[in-house]
Image (cartoon, rainbow over the protein chains, first blue to last red):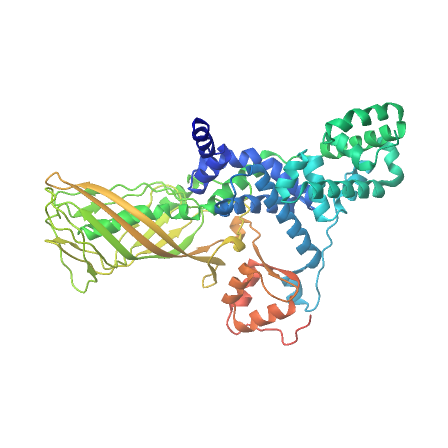
Amino acid sequence: MLLSVLLVMAGKEENPDIQLLRKAKNGDRDAFGELFRKYEKRVFRVARRMCGSDDEAWDITQDAFIRAMQAMDRYDTQYRFFTWIYRITTNLAINYAKKKMRRREVHFEEAYSAEGQQVIEDNVADRAAGEQLLGEVSRAVDKLTPALKAVFVLRVDQQLSYSEIAESLDIAMGTVMSRLNRARLKIREELGSMLGEWE
Amino acid sequence: MNCPDFDTLMRLLDGELEEEKVKEVSEHLISCSRCRNLIDSQRNLEGSWRDSFVTPDSGKFRSMEWRIFNRINRRSRWKTFVPAAAGIIAVLLGVKLILDNKPSLDRVTDLSRRSRVEYTTDTVQLREERAESLTSTDDGLDFETTAPNAGVIAPAEGDVSVGDATEEIIGEPLGYGVTTDGAPELSQAAADEEGSGESLRGAGRLIQETDRQVIAGGTVTESVSGDRGSAGLSGYEVECEETEITEETMLLGAVEDINLEVQVDEVSDITLSLDADTTGLATVETVPSVVSTSEETQDNRTLNQSCEYHSRFNETSYYDMDALKVDIHIELVFDADGQPDSSTALLLDSLFAGWSDYISFVYRDTVLVIPLSDIRQLFMEGSTVPAETTE
């Protein structure tokens, strides 16, 4: 009996992040600031690792927090907040990448003044100047499919455990392991003979 | 032991290998340089990649924090409306607002340089701080309102209307009621101090318009004009006449080195307006607000009131692009089928049909970037729609 009471009480105890989220949703500026500062760099980092530029990473970071606030009602509080915000972030990054692959960008003034002339902007991955090896690794990571990249980024960059990655991406543990394995093998394949430099 | 597979070695590297296998694989590594090198190379390349990340300085995060909070609490922008709503209650009680003291232009220019403008490097805070005081005169009918030190830094114009007001009053009605003509019906709940009085509830409609001028920095002057609401309590009857509020905010003085970000896609209900010399954005929002007041009556009784307003705001903001040095553009996003995303669809609804059709047809699978300065073309009636369209 006592145990069940304690369990109920424990169940009612709300995660501090959720408390902050609720307060922030109700307009508490300090609560939002605390929550944002706690996760801002991690979210940005995941976004930046997942996409091709700082600008995109900023957009994704902003969208991730806005969506987290807006979708609070759908948040299952049995999960940890950071896995939820990671899920939102990676989903946004994946969607962003898909859209980017599909769409060209046309500037109105060019299209209007010289009809038919359309500008297609290629997004070129940043090169780590003077660090060829690192640049090669970055390029190899960039070439991963979004699904593989998400697992790789959460494991290697954020150093999440397999179970945390599974929770963040809402996939099975086995899927985490197989994707991570494939991602690593693809990167090694891309690096080829350069791998010897790392040993 | 044969060399473990790549997956096993990587799980050992990640600390995720089952305990019973860790010892076995670790022992193998002592004698197998190939597997050892594989783990070492993977650890090193991943570590280098992880450590190479350069986190941006916190300035941009702070700016973003502010921006996100304001976006998700858009309603807070209208907190400045609360004093105005309080004024509406005052009107219901038969109070007239008197404001005066318009500054001269010279004074305004001077004040603008000392304005309390708050901004970050990449965001303009459209912030208004107002402090209003209501002072009852002897007869309890006249109020004076002052609103010093406004920090609005961008010019804006807007109309504010308030409708569907419901009111509940607990306490004995004041005795200085004024009845006016042509008023919509408004009934109220009332109960006397002993609790034996009758209780009446009802709903009414109130639209009030005032004129207000806010100058950046310094003293804010406000004037209330038009059909001043004069209503009051006479017995248990209240009548109120429609009045209107128009609000005008002006900026005098340039603001430099500011990158104003207009996130059109986040505005839930947006229309564009180009009926002024400068380009402008107009937003329309419906904002519910609750205003509660507690007031001592002349015979030392307390009058508590709570009104809920569902207010529709029309705000048009005008920006001097040269002064603000801003680069505002709007992105229209179309998928492979030519279908606009939701915010694009909203904008297209505002365009003239010819342009809307043209844009939707041509720009499939495209993000069309339109500088704000060119948006004028899309809204000008009779503007030329390209005759030939190509994909």
